[in-house]
Length: 347
Image (cartoon, rainbow, N blue to C red; front, side):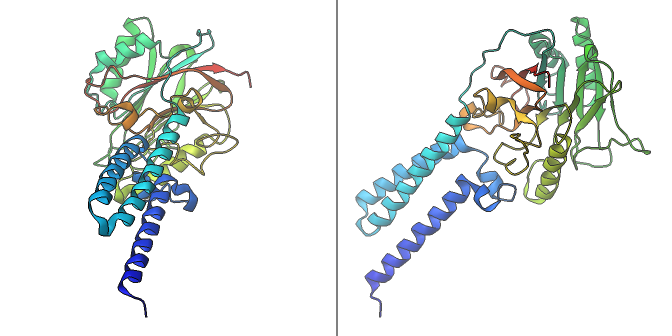
């Protein structure tokens, strides 16, 4: 018969093993293919913040271990696990990049891409346009931006010498949905969104629209303004379907994709092909050592946020500059804009 001391040790061991298993899943849910399930999808989103919280909790437990002898072994064991979890989480952030915004000198064939979820146009058309003009953007992806605001942005850009065409997709029959707009420089040619007989955009994401624009001439990249549904508990299936749809859009051909993906590269694990993060599209932030910088929410430090706004492209392009814009955190949107300079590989 087991004595009380042995039972306590067994219970403590089971608790430590349970904590270790939970931390492993939070650290790398891909091990059980849980990166796109609730709630592990949420847990893996904020690696920087998780590292800070884990370190703080470890310190508290070490103090408890010092002053409470009966739980000393348990508290110190869990504290060590939390320190390891925090260190590895911080390591992931560091490996993906803590930020560099140096750009190679632009060439005439380069394409500059700006993506900004504007939270319903909260920054205002003038401020959105000012950023686009400052960056010399040829492609502007604007999730949660209606046609009226997008047209005003385009008008301001044209006045600055950068004429743009405007494409907007809205799900008017989905109450919670918000439009997505895409501005494309007229220098890249005429673009159109494929629609069905009812005039509804095809090849797009459920609940929240993404704009899939193809060149009318047949020459040039397909350009996608991405905005899949956020992975709230009830909407995880729609979120997964949206990411799958975006991956499918990047399976073949020449594709540039940008926007609010509501997903980090962790969530995209298993959806990439041939070195791509999503389909064959490669992430511009990760390739330029910027992948650890959070783009949402804008009111927390970049290293504590989650990097869910992306610019991606297929092998026809390589990234020669990328940055997360941090000086517009008070502009009204809860997202930070991202800017990428893409250069042609000639492939």
